Length: 93
Image 1: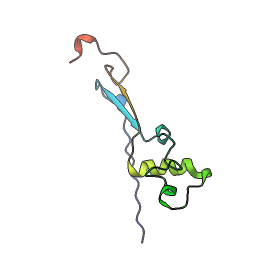
Image 2: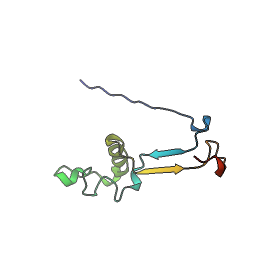
Image 3: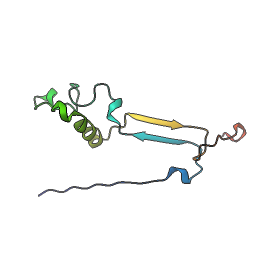
Image 4: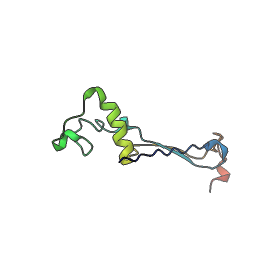
């Protein structure tokens, strides 16, 4: 018996005037060496299991990083509204 699920949350961050907007992505290419073939905790070859096929390493890296919830890249945009308009210095709190 198998169970699976997929949850996708879609938002429009430009619909608000929040002063600070931060974005994050699960981009595995920001990890040094990626997950597969790195000898790290996400590399099955480091634990005696068969190594990831080099032709599928990108697919494995993306899936492994998403599965464990790593967020290696975070971008911040500060002192601007959601519409990318600078907030006047007098309004900074």
